[in-house]
Amino acid sequence: MFRRFTARPSRRQFVKSSVSVAVTLPMLPQLAMAQNRQVNVYNWDTYIGETTLDDFASATGINVQYDLYADNSELFARLREGNPGYDVIVPTNDFVSRMIVAGMIQKLDHSRIPNFKNLAPRFQDGEFDPGRQYSVTYFWGTIGIGYRKSAVSQVPDSWGYVLGDQSGEYAGKISWLSEPSTMIQMALKYLGYPLNSTDMGQLKEAEAVLTRAKKNVRAIAGDNGQDLLLSGEVDLAVEWNGDVAAVIPEDDDISYVLPKEGGLLWQDAFCIPTGAPNVEEAHEFINFILEPEVHAACAETTQFSLPNEAAMKLMPAEYLENEAIFPPEETLANCETAQYLGEEIARFYDEAMTRIRAA
Image (cartoon, rainbow, N blue to C red):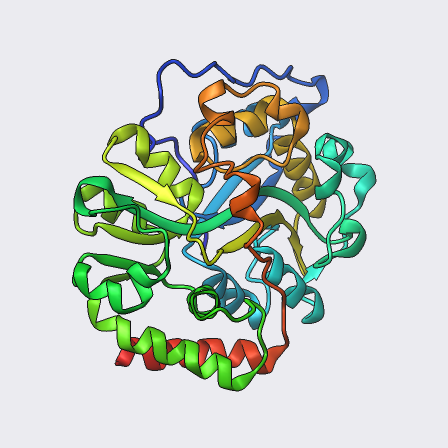
């Protein structure tokens, strides 16, 4: 079921001038007795620091079993019939709400997460989880378009370049994200509708937009559109901002834009699923990540936006000033946060994406 994590070279190479954020946490004396403890983590691909798991094991004596998923739909499907043994998962905000309603995640014991105080005030509450009873923000960011500057005549600052008539100019050189809700929501933004629309007429219009444009799409990628962009297989990729930001240092022909119609403003959060076998260790893992040095190291690797104020103080200028990671406030103004809209809408997303794939 799980695969044991072993250290491997990162798929990303980072700016060598970045400040070091290596973890140097002291070994606690009682940890020599904790060698049989374990935590089972289910996370997105390429979404942890290069040494974070080994650092956690060294600092706590807790072994880490680490498994990967490509998107929220895969995570939800894996846990829908019952927790197969995971202790920590990392769903996006609307899926946090969905899992709360479904009874799939349990309340956190905040007394075991003292580093929660390191989060900026706006990440200590949220409409999707009032009082943050079930979730702790790991990273936040946007979804927009990664692109090759040499392949476009101008900045592709509209969803039309990947979803509309303009996509024909890049036929066979476009990738989309595989998550059904995300692609439907981006089509809604392109049409000028609310991202959280429940109007079935608007939702079907969004499906029609995607169905027409699908012929121009080379790949509907789980969580690797940035790699397709880096390899030159695609010139335009609907992607998470941090994934694109992570490959920009490897190829200065790659850039990222948040379309003028606005995009998705998201938060990914640590949660403990119902039935977790190692609840104490899960809290220790979450609290460890929120250590400023640890969280900063994760951000340096992933290039996603930190919610941790203390960790932000450790980050280099090239991170803090990177508009792919922290877009200007005026461009964020058109973004919306996805909400859980009920199982009928969730079912429509899934069924619509199945139809779109088959088109």
